[in-house]
Each structure stands twice: as structure tokens, then as C-alpha cells.
Length: 604
Image (cartoon, rainbow, N blue to C red; front, side, top):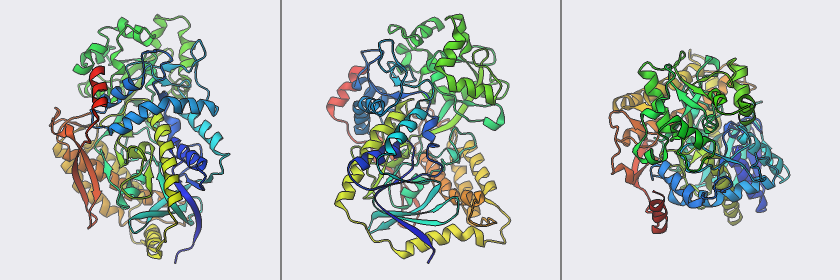
């Protein structure tokens, strides 16, 4: 038997970002004991990278905004593959969640009459994003931590979960290890909430930090939970492209929301060249009209730089491929041009976009108040993930809940900017509440020694392979290169099919990796243990992308560039088969109630 330390809770939350903290706070308020596991240090969650704002139809800047408009915008952005119930709850409940965050001490930017200020963002009809400059995610994490620390929540920092423990089809806990010392940990729980974020580290160029290796999705899949919409991976149109050491770091959409424009090397605003039909009546025909929208003129049409992220990313790729890119393989994003329009523009930019100003000044030696930035698409957000019930956030495995980026349904085929932060609040809260309800009705389940022994044995295997010449870093790098090249922004059936045997070969290599040293402070060992999760989610993305033989939202097939009406009626489910094989299933999109259909028709 391996040595391990045991911890017991009513609800175990895996992940300490916005969704995990909000779930823990809500479950604690329901009177149950809570344990929170975070892969890195508390406060370093990827939520802090969300800069632009929290989407909530509060109507503070334009009183015409309401939950119905927000619901219709979210459904249209998601190409109507969204879980309609989640989209409805999200639109209805996000304003109260923002006000609750404010009551807990969050400091938002303000309108002249003292209300929470809201800014424009891509895909949203009205100014809707409550924000704190361009540091909204950081303020959210600060507020949730400050509030949550008084709730009696136990936090286990720098821990990684290796396996969810099961009994008779129900989750009963988790087995993991302390990354600092390498000691094993057993967590017994009546309910488990997974809030581990996305899969960005499966790709070479990503805005995601090192923690984002698809852990929660792979854990849930191995436990028998369904995954859904895995083909829909969002490539944010604007990440840094230079210098190479910072390639992929996010450049917030707030830059475009404040008037930033995209230009090619000929200094032409290429986004005017390709405006999709559904957005023509809402999009500016000229720079003057777009500028008036940015300044809050409610009668003007929005600039094309605020179209949906999938469309902008593909337009940028087109400019680069056709030889009109910037010197380092991106395009130019220019906010400095607004000094032609407003006095004290430099101070205005520094006030509205303080993080972006310092980011480019320190990392690229560029003053964004005086010169354009170089940007290009970066792997950013997973719309797909663990399939959950719209009301309770419970997965298809009893006792296993999910919230945030690792849970799927709200965003459909494409996420609108800002919806991620309100998603964390609305569904983190719901996941925590219903996990607590489940825990109150359930006892602790038995944990079989065989599960613990197998998980520990698999984790220690890399130390025993003394004859292997290959380490984990090369396999991880090869996986990232392959996914970037074959399963990236623009896909083809041939390249996707080519990726499957590549994944199989990488999987075989991962089974023969060796690491040296001991279990303390061993990054090579950590990387070896992350690889199975990366391979699982990469295969899920690839197989779902092969199955969806059309282009829709963030999934673009160059060999099938049009939408297929039949695929507009189905979600793609990924499920672990009885022999361990990955099954791909088409599942009809649930029918929407007539009253919600009517809202969408009225908004059109």
C-alpha cells in the first residue's frame, strides 16, 4: 500500500479560479465542510487573465439592454447549439451576481452618476461588460478570496489530482499528490465539483498558463462522464506575437472596445472587407460611424473589430497567409490613433488599459499610446467540456459537478467576450449549492484500495523506467506542434485524420517516458503526469472535429466551409466505451421552449 494522507469533506472543489471559489463559497454557506484543491498557488488562477469585463445586462450605460437581449446575443454567438437553459439562467442571473460581487468589495469603474460602468465588447448588442480597467479577472479573484477566506474553507495549494475515485457509479473522492514534496493525498468526499479550466497547453501558441492541461475534463471522462462540443475551441484573435518569449500572451478585447483598430502591413483596416450577413445591419460601414459607436453613440453601428472572435481570428489568418501580415507574422492593433480624436489620449489609454500599457512596455518595449501592437490568434478558451445539467451543473456521473470553462453548454459553438466571467459566477454558485444539497442527502462512499494502488503505481512508473532515453518535455512539445498544425484554427478532414495516428504514436511514447531524481520539486515528473490528460483531450477535440463535417462558430473546416442544417441540430458527445475506446455520438440539441424562441425572433 502506498503511503498517503487522508482528508475528508462533504464537498471537494478541484480548482481555485473564479468558478471554484464561487462554488466553495456557496457550498460553505449551505453549511457543509469544504476542501479546495489548486494546482498552483491560491490567487494564480487563470481567471486573472480575463481582463475585459463581466457580461451582465444591467443597463447602466444603455437602458435598452436586458436579459432577453443578452440571451439572444449568447444564443446567436453560439450558433444555437447552446444549452438554452444555461443561456437563459446566465442572462437572468448575471446582473445579481455582479451586484453580489460588488457587495463583497469589488471596485468597478463608474459612470458619472456612480453606477457600475459597462463597455462594448464583440458580439454584444449594447455596452454590457462591467469592468475594472483591464484587470477585471484579478479584481474578481481578489474579492472572492477575501470573502471566501472567512468561510471556513480548507485550501490545499500546489496539489494535483490524479484520479477521481468511484463506488458503484458514483464519485466518492479523489486521489492526488502534493507537487512540492511528491507525497500522495487521499480526499474522501460526498460530492466533487470540478473547476479546473481549459486545455490551452495542448497547443503551441496559447494565452493559457502552464496549469491548463485539461485535467478536469480527462478526470471526468475517465470516471465515465460525457464530454460535449469538444470541437469548439476558441482562438482569441489578439495575442502577442513578439518577442518569441511572450508569444500567445493575451491582448484583451478591451483594446478594441476602447477604439483599437486592426490594420495589415499596408495600414488598411481589413475588417471592413468581410462582414458576415447576420451582422451587416449592425456593423459600421466607415471609420467615423464605428468611432461614434465606440464613444457610446447609441445610434451608431459598431466597428467590425467587435464582431465575434472566430470571425476576426480567421480574417487575421487570411491577411497573414496572403502576405499582408506584420513583420513578425501577425497584424497591427492600433489604439494610438485615437489621439486624432480626443484630447489627452495618452492618459485616457493608460487609465482605461493600464495592464496592456505596462505589458507591452515591459515585455516588447512598445508604447501603445504612440505605436501599434503586433498581434495574432492564440489558443484561448474551450467552449466544450463536461456535459452538465443546466440547473444543477451535475454531470452524467452522480455526485460529480462541474463549473466554469471545464463545463460545457452555455457558449455553444462560440463564446462571446465577457460571458466567461459571468459564467463563473452564475454556474459556480449553482454548482456549489447543488453539490451541497447532494452531499447532505448522501453518505461517504467506500474507497477501494485497488483504485488507490493503481493510481499510485501509474504515477510512480516513470521513475522505474531507467532504460528509456526519452523525457516528457519532448513528447509534450511534439504534441503541441502537431495540434497547432493539424487541429488548429483552419481545419481540413485530411489533416484531422492525419492527427489520429500521430496521437496514437504520442500515446505510446508517453507510456515509456522516464524521469530522474526524486519526487520533490520534480517538474519533469509533473509534466509526465500531465501528458495523459493532454492526450485525452487532444483526441477528443480531433474526433469531434472529424465528426462535425461543416463550419460553424469556432470550428472551421476549409474543406467544408458552409454550415450544414443537419449539424445545426446536433451536439457531438464524447464518451468512454466499455473497452476504454473513445466513442463519438451525435445527440439532438434539446428543443427550446416557445417563449424563448419568440425572444430570439423578436431580437432578430
